[in-house]
Length: 221
Image (cartoon, rainbow, N blue to C red; front, side, top):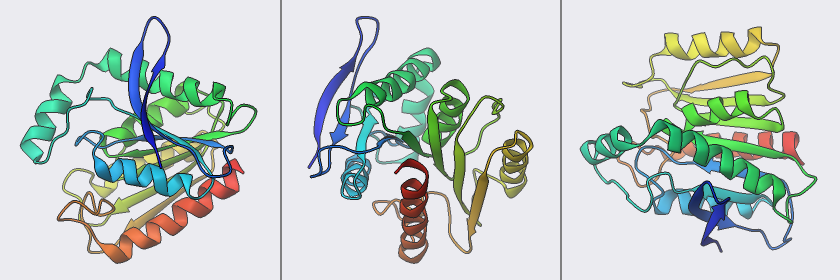
């Protein structure tokens, strides 16, 4: 359904996976991949969201590189330049906002782990963002200027995101006066949503998908 495209301005050029629904128009959703890179799972997810009527763009933050092990992923994330990351994430949202199929409609962002951190950062920089969905990732930002509503999915047995950090983030968003709903999934681990990972849990992933689709529908359409 989707294709790799190159977007941006003279100052920054990034590639990513663009997926457009059969309706050829709709709200926009930026998908920010986890530390594995833009692998087949995130492309399939983009197509899945497009099937729900969204124009989806998933930037390739690793410039074509993909990891299959934790060690490889950690190395790729360590090599990622923070300025390039921020510029790429901003360029992705700008691209969707100006895309002919999206123009005049709302946009949201869905981020996973590393990508969740960037999604939260983007919400603090782009007041035009109306929906933020994060999977097992946190961050500390100034949400006072954000106009987004927030949805979070977290694993009960997460070695990377302890619950106290998640509760702190939830409190931070709520104290800024924003709508926030965080769900905790029992007996699952980090990456439980990603079907190509050993941590994948079909029941939890199905429920998280239903909640995500309903949330994006209600906030963007």
